[in-house]
Picture 1 (cartoon, rainbow, N blue to C red):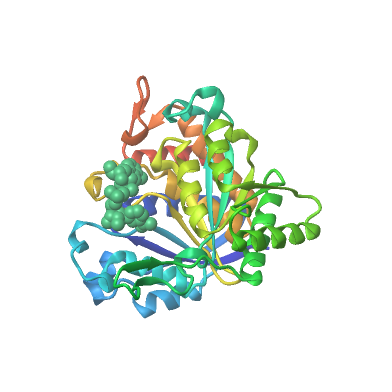
Picture 2 (picture 1 turned 90 degrees about the vertical axis):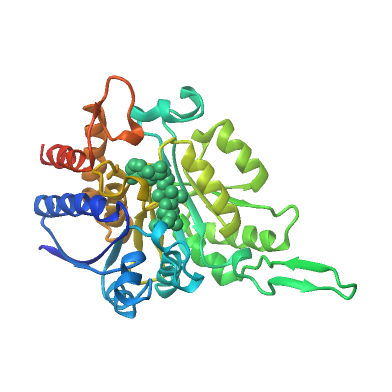
Length: 361
Ligand code: NAD
């Protein structure tokens, strides 16, 4: 029986519409091949939404997202909107989307593609074969804990305060996403905290350890965050799935991503307890190359693959897309951002055509 899905497309600004067009073509082809049916609905977010309505996340856009099975986002932002007040900035639309959909889990893979090993700043033997997923808690921890602010003390000196806090239920829900994610991968989960110093981390460790009883097939380990940072650059191949809080995850996911060396290749997923997830490239709207047919569409296409795997539970379709991306790189196609000697330089559209051809093979 044909599986039917409603997908909201948020192309956004800059290179967004160019890379989104490639991803949509790929999704249409894979749907034909695997007897899936996608109903796409496009909506404005970010700068385009500000221009059209004055609001970076119009209510109607959020409503369309809520009524869909998954949201595929490209990128938002650009010079034109940089000087607007904060509540009217494109980034505010993105935060509103995450909050509005209750997206508390951020999944950021860092996978070294064999064809791009030399783009990493680390040695070939250290990064070859690296395939890590960082699961970061996105809506709690020190970025949101109360009290926060800059207060005046009795002596008139200013004191800056943030609070790192997690409740048991917040830890459990991100823990479950992480164990489930590890199950879909190599079944190894490393929980990162600072339990030797922080009480909030001790609770984190206790809850994750308790949760592990429900997932006997997943091997759990724990690391302190300072050691985890060191191990990531020393021997990243020891990691399969990492779960951590908001602040540690922000830092470690960027470090892990850079092991791969190329921002135009990295997808991400943000998931909630129920309802649609948002799937988007890690990179921004690249206004410097917008409209020039120079953008690398692969991160967007791999975000569509993550949508199929983690949002719609269609791993076979995700596998096909990821394989096609490998094949175009094997064939030597490169956009400017990942170009190296002896390879074939192509633009965004030609890379899209090569991907379609590989998928059709
Ligand atoms: P950026 O990621 O847009 O660009 C950084 C550099 O990488 C640029 O030189 C760009 O040309 C290049 N690049 C990025 N993606 C590429 C791709 N797919 N193919 C080829 N080259 C690529 O980051 P920035 O320049 O710091 O930000 C530009 C705008 O994007 C800003 O308005 C920023 O706020 C916004 N931004 C949005 C998101 C998002 O939508 N999630 C994330 C980061 C930045």
